[in-house]
Length: 239
Image (cartoon, helix red, strand yellow):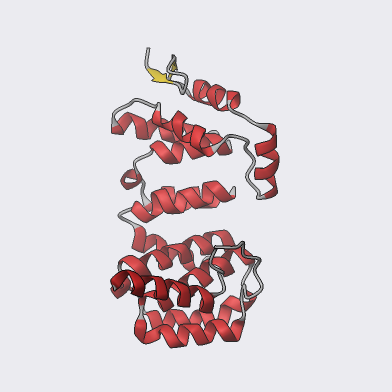
């Protein structure tokens, strides 16, 4: 019998049903209510959920296959475990494209982009495939990959053309796509000194997220403020 160690250091059979039973035992009604306000239909503390994923003791190949079984359930908490135990490099473009369209819960979308797509050898193909998709969540994922490349691999991008697109489209974009495009605008302003003034000017002109409620000691997502603050911090660290 294949087993997994639970967070209580006992052992249960390593099956989809066993993982879901463990997640069900961690369900918290108040957390579910809070998560559902953000569109996430689960009530499991993410630290405890990560503990469930960590307890899956399998070699990489069967662990990835098990992740596919977990993903296939369609359950949000179970899919989050799947994203933590899968092997990102084993997914093909078609698989990831199907997953981004199926993973509509915000946390699933976020982890799929950040933990899987950004580690994929197909990142560039996915970026190009998704960024112009008519589905705003898919397009948002594409722009998240663009932002990633601004920081990690800017030479593959036409940054001036991206600023043109942002200037023309961000103001009226749906909220998820708008947020991701704004991230790219800020990233360009932070990372590229030559384009910083233009990125700041676009942000000032469009005023996207200018009035976004920002808690004390946090940085506003309004691009001109965000760019200015991160550049200041980077300069302080450099000195």
